[in-house]
Length: 123
Image (cartoon, rainbow, N blue to C red):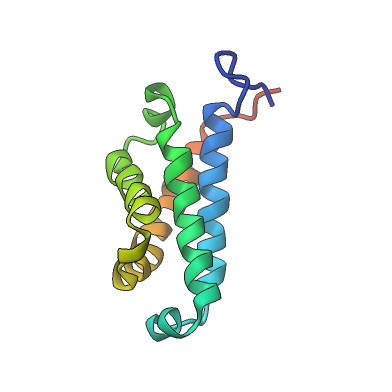
């Protein structure tokens, strides 16, 4: 896959794929789990927080053109959530983490899958 010519790093399609991969991981992590598991299982908590951080970090680096391929996403909120998870690590609200995982991530997965349907692989 071609790299971003300006940075040599991932291009927008790759970054969106990183977001989708992390979001899919979130769905796997919470399958058959309850909100109470987040309090009791530090590995689950760290896994969810890390995956949500990856989503936000990749989102922060998607260009305006790339974002226009998935206009339904709340790009600013996704990036802001990442910033809170990274910079306010001592004050992470597990209820919010759980809500993002249960409510927001499925919509994110659906939106990204729709974007990829109309965005052929680059060779």
